[in-house]
Amino acid sequence: MTPRLKLPIALALMGAVLLALTPSAMAARGMEVAVQDDSVFLFQFRGGANRAKGLKLAQQTKVTFIRSNVVWSYVVNRQKKQKKTPKKIRYNWTGYDALIRAAIAKGYHVQLDLTGPAPAWATGNHKVGVDRPQARAFKAFAKAAAEHFRAFGPIRYSIWNEPNLRAWISPLKKGPSLYRGLYTAGYSAIKAADPNASVLIAETSPYQLAKGRNAMSPLKFLRGVTCATASYKRARNCATLHADGFAHHPYDFAHKPTYKYPGKDNVTMSTLGRLTSALSKLQRANLLTTPSGGVPQLYLTEYGFFSSGKYKLPRKTQGKYLVQGFKMAQRNPHVRQLLQYLFAKPTGNFRAFDTSITSRKGAPTVAFKMLASWAKKAAKAGQIAVAKL
Image (cartoon, rainbow, N blue to C red; front, side, top):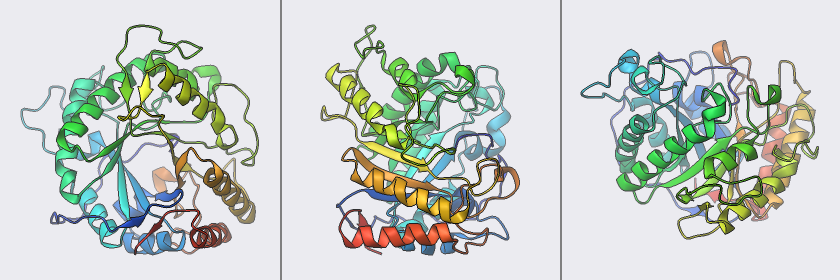
């Protein structure tokens, strides 16, 4: 989520007993359709759609993966304000256990984004937030998460959320080097704890904001992370980065999906070629590759259009644009996944970022029905992956 919002830090999580379940088989055909809505699948806010409702909605849109943000300061709970690293860090994974257990039981796979805000002991200013998050401390968090969640079978992870935005990593000018540290620490910790886990890099937002003061363009950011020059050559003696895929959020709220957003370093749905070209160049320069030496595929881990606020679209237009975007992604041979961000209409602190396609209680809108209709046809044609539910 492009963060004009912050995840609430203190929310009660329902109790659960850890069960070791493995995911149901999934037909490995075509693009994955995914969804994220932590209000529904994780927190189950009173008066809104609950997890069971969300899982039923996901069936209608042929979802195979459910994504959730694992917020560092949230899972350490009351310890988050301590300025010195606790001798024993107590993590509360309860809500995530419940989400994963319910998802797996219905045949879905899960991917978790390990992200900030960081606890006070792990920031540059020793306050809960995103100021200079420390890689060494993050490594301990990533290790603990991977050791815990491996009981559920293979999990797909990504490192941080929209690190090219000042609201997620600050100061922005140091973002690339800070993120490189976080990513390398997180990647090594996860792979050591669970060799079967996959790890995605970046989770970038789509374009520069406020002339680079609030958001750095994703390709400029990527070059900084990988130590590449403007021509994607090795700028200095940095180690090769490895990733199982590249995660990106190709939002463009103000235009239809076919609009070519200007700026050679910005990447929206219609300009994914800029990103795939950059990844190919980085692979050839041995700066960023998959573990087997290939070019990372794209996982478009957030996408959607506003149904309220400044960029509000009529529901029919919202549905039309969504279907168009999903079709574009499905036809792109480099795209492995496209994720609809939000099902239910958000409330409270989440209200400003409303890309919902159902009512708060989960009643389908025209936009939802249009997306579900496309997904049904695409699944029948073998164009998208299908879970065995």
